[in-house]
Length: 253
Image (cartoon, rainbow, N blue to C red):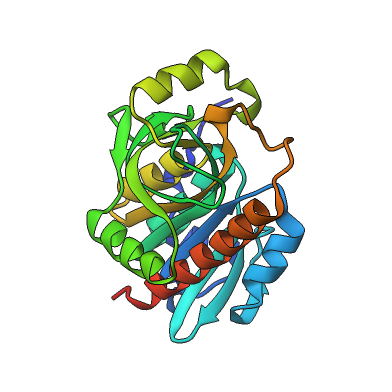
């Protein structure tokens, strides 16, 4: 019997449209991906901002409209899931991919609710390497600048700097934290590098806007309770980040 393997990279434009159940006219202007455990509540909140929402043929991928822009929103936890969504819609020709979610802070000046705009991302996620010939990737500078402007207007604490995407929250070690800290990385999470790598592969601009949750330099993890002020800051920043992501979508041309 003849063996005839076929890669996902071989899937055609028309096959993706048919599989998703969208027309060419419905290809999104922008994609927003969010990495979070709290999928049900967060997804309900995010979709409430959009109009004409429908779930596509592939589960948990939602199409909707934000004012005059077509948006894809998906809760995508971890690089393996995030890269799928970024790959599909970047290949189809969306104009912007935005990763949002939470992260661990690797420098002592960072507190829960602070917002990180990664400009240089170290790819330690195990997925990005299949899209890049490099161990790092840069987010789009113009979108970083615009994001900082919008977030600062909302009174957010915003930091731009180096970030690392790692493959597994539970596999992170103290030795890794020390190394990343001494190397000047601001933060760590599990999606950004893969999301941006797939977008770059297909010539699409991308950025990440992530909120500090874990205060790693103080030995605090997601299991450690936050006080009332920290919880309020975290909630406000998570809302601000999503709303700013939507504002950015309006500026896509």
